[in-house]
Image 1 (tube, rainbow, N blue to C red):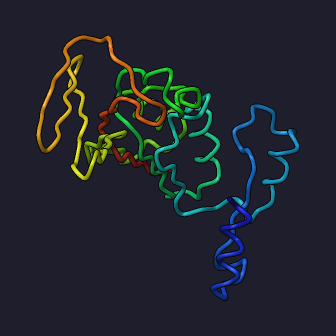
Image 2 (cartoon, one colour):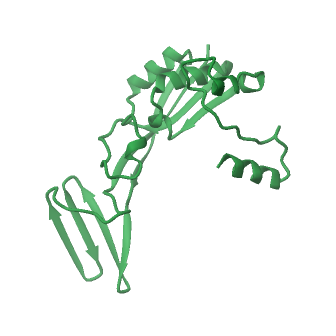
Amino acid sequence: MVAAYNARAANQGLTPAEMYAHQGNICTRDDGDATAAAFASPEFSGFDVAAVGLGFHHFDDPALAARKLAARLKVGGVLVIIDFLPHGKPDPAHAAASTVTHHGFSEAQMRRIYDQAGVGNDFALEEVANVVFNTHTHTHAGSEHTHAHTGSEHTHTGSDHTHTHTGSEHSHPPGHEPEMRRTIFIARGVKA
C-alpha cells in the first residue's frame, strides 16, 4: 500500500519532499529497535501535526503510541486522534474483530492519554458523527431487500414483505455480519 501511494505521488509529478510515505513501527518500547532506529533522523521530528484516523483502537498500547507521536511534534504541535467512543465488542466472527484491541475511548481516557503524552494543553474532544457499519441491501428477483438489526431484533424488508425475528438465534451468510453502530470523536491537544 505504501509503495502504491508513493507511485501515485510520483505519477502526479510530486517529489518525495512534497509527498512520500514511509512504513515502520515507531511504537516499540525499545528505542534501540531497528524499526525505531530507521525513524531516528531529524526529518521524522519537529512536526506541526501528528494524526491517527480511526486506527487508535488497533494499537496494543494507545498511551505508548500517543507518547511516541507526541515526541515527534515540535513545541506547540498538535496531536489529533479520530476514533470511537466506548462501545460493545464486535461479533468475534466479524472480519476485523481480531485486529481490534480496544473498544472505544471515553473523554476521560483520552484526556489522561493526552496529559501523560505531554500534549494535554488546550485538550478538546468532540463527538462528530454516528455511523453504522455492515448495513447491506440485497436484490432478490428484481426487488430491493434490506436487512437491519436493533438489539436482539432484526428485520427484513422487501417490496412485497416484511418480517422480523426477535431473539439472538439467527445467522448471517459470510460477508453479512450484523450492523455495528459507533460514535466517532475527534480529539486534539497541544504539546507544551
